[in-house]
Image 1 (tube, one colour):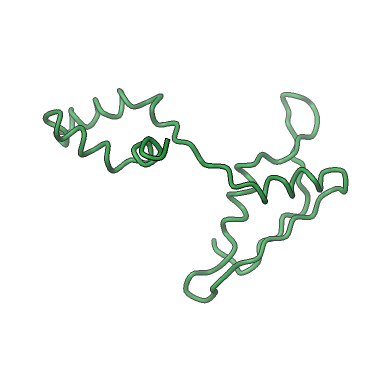
Image 2 (cartoon, rainbow, N blue to C red; image 1 turned 45 degrees about the vertical axis):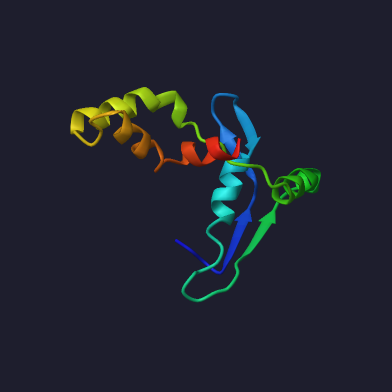
Length: 112
């Protein structure tokens, strides 16, 4: 749920595969920070990360860089398009192009 302020208390999470602790991924941090700010009440939100001093630079660099989020849809494009054909949503190549235009993959393809 959205909140005015998001506090991430601790940035490590146990990884049973490694048998030890890992830092939160960039995606996890951004997902949590993205919850800051309630559109109906706030014009901005605040995010607070409480971490070890040794990890401070890592999280500052993550939050200060504007890295694009890339679509991974191309890996499953054939299956998704086939499903649309079976459903009857896509009946010809023009429908397929129109359908693709509603995806984030299309947005990223235009920018790259």
